Length: 322
Image 1: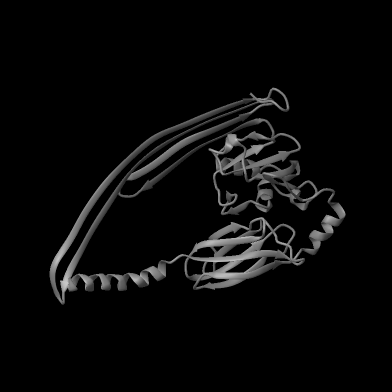
Image 2: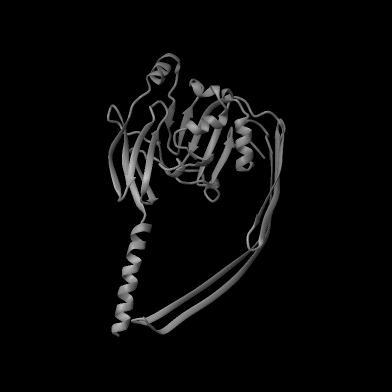
């Protein structure tokens, strides 16, 4: 009994430093304007000070509050940004949970001048289930549609990965019609499309019932005219050599006509995983081993899958699609 108590105590003592080192930490705060108004949908990103890689990122809520979690003890650089305001930077040496005072963003003078001279309607409009970001009268129309998404309130883009309220399974619409393209294909399409064709970006945080099971959010790109008709297709493949080789291959094809659009995609995935676990525990009384426990586990898993999907749309008129 005494030996058992000693073993438990030693185990707890050895595990305690590991628990401290691996403990997740958080940073919380509130984003405010100079007029002491909360700024909702601001991008809050934390970069590792060592190499400027992104450690975490969130969007402030309707009251301007944000919470960054699952951070480790480290040195970081915090960046807070919102359209029309100067970027805010703060060096942080995180050793414990950090609760910041209000972060005040300063308005850009040129943004105020731009709004005073050229704006004829609100840049950002809140509706029941969405944010409507009007871009027709801003300097953003000088770039590409993809660049507009980077600046759209409510959208967080890290390394070209798009998320809305921590949801990365985004459904994309163009003029209320779904676009069946992969993430890379959509990025290429929007990067090559001039922003001057865009009227507004709608960020739908509470999607209609027909999208609930598929995506966490919907981004609807409202354009003054439809994308140019034509064909877009790709072939892709991936190979990884570990204990066993793993590979995948697929193809996507998208065609848009005047009244029709057609999408077909196929993917094949082949992977075999090998997991080996060898564990040995010795029980000692002083320097003498009085018992041991050993486990050897080897597990092989094989997965081969085929995935195909197809979609066809026919525009009967401006309001009805088959």
